[in-house]
Structures are given as structure tokens and as C-alpha cells.
Length: 261
Image (cartoon, rainbow, N blue to C red; front, side):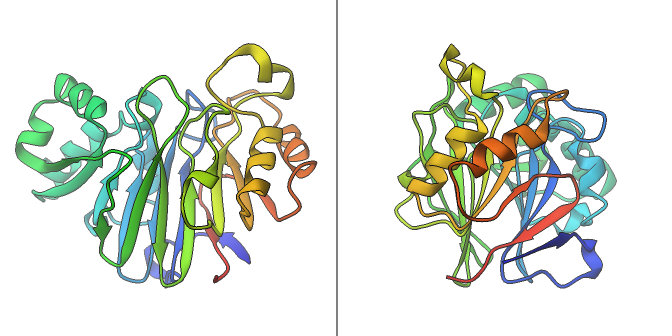
């Protein structure tokens, strides 16, 4: 199991890796935009979620022209509202049409309401659900419906015998066990403090993330989506009490590479 900082476009990506672009929960913090992650192999680059402001960090790691596709987990604004800015970049800056974008039906409705020309001129939109299994380059993707007020899809990426999972947003009613195959490295939300677990908020705590990662035989846990102002180390301590494997925090610019199966 190895972790490290991203080397941007100059490095050679591992068989499968994920770079944190934005990881703040619900709204941007002083050091991070909202949810966005770059999944790469040596030949393919896919952006998972596009939270507001995320293209700033994104361009430190990859040229926008090199992104093969974008996948958006759900319609809450902290996960997709950089799409209009990316549309402007692709249409007017790079003159690149037919950028593949995959997302839920609800996200498409909101994007069209905010920027209808995006799907008319630049984004080739594919509506996905929990049964979708797109292959983008050499990465196979599958999805699982999470426990959240709107249709929200957890994402599993697999390539070359390696697997990475991303929970998106979820309450305690979802577990990574929902994926038929195991996950080597799981980026799992940990929005709540332990004292908030019984309040009915549709997110989970570090403790709950640790328990579910253990049940699903996850090898490496990365905690994310922690709201600004919260103590990140508390989430790690809560997860560590339930999960024996390696635990890390999502930090913008950090790249994680799973161990092989």
C-alpha cells in the first residue's frame, strides 16, 4: 500500500490511482473546494464529481484536455456546480466538443436549468443509475444507490486488478458491501461527529465508516467530506476504533494508490 503526493501530468500514473481535488463537506473550506477526485491509469483520466471551485486544484494535476470523462454522483450543488465553468473551458478555451459526462437524471435537470447550452454544445451526457456499468478507457465503473435524500450513486472503479471506491454522500443505510466485488481503497465520507449519529442527518460518522469498511473487507480507508471547522483527527480516531487497516484523510493534492488484489 503506497500513498504520496500527486506529481501532476509529468508523472507516470500507477495501474490505478486517485488524487484528491476537493474534499470539503457541504461548502468549501479555506484550503479545499468541495468534492472532486481524479481517477487515473497510465492511459485514462476520469473526474469523479465537480464541486464548486474544484477546477483550480484540478489544473495543478492534469491539463483539462487530458480528461477522458466526468462522472457526477448526485445533484447536490457541492458535487456538480463546477460543470458550468468546465463547459466554458472546454467550449471557449479548448474548443473541445463531445466531452463525455455521466450523471443522474436529477443532476441533468439542474445543469440544464443553470446552463442549458452545456449539454447542447459541449457535454455528451449519459444518464446513469445503479445498474449502469460504463467502461471508460481501461477503467470499468459500477454504481450503488446510497442512503441519501436524492438519487446518489457510490462509485467503484476497477482496472488492472486494482479497485477504488468512492461513497459520495450517504447515511448509515448504505454499506460498501453493496458492491459485489471487494474494494482495495475506499474514499468514504465522514461528515458527522459521533454525537450526531442519532440525529437523522443523511451522512455518517468516522466510527460508522470504520465499521462498514471492516464489514466489507476494505483494505485501505480514506476519510473525506468533513465540514469546515470540524476536527479531522477526531474522525480518524473514531474510524480507527472500528477499522484495523490503514486510514488516511483526504487532502487536496494527495494521491492514493491501492495495493493489488
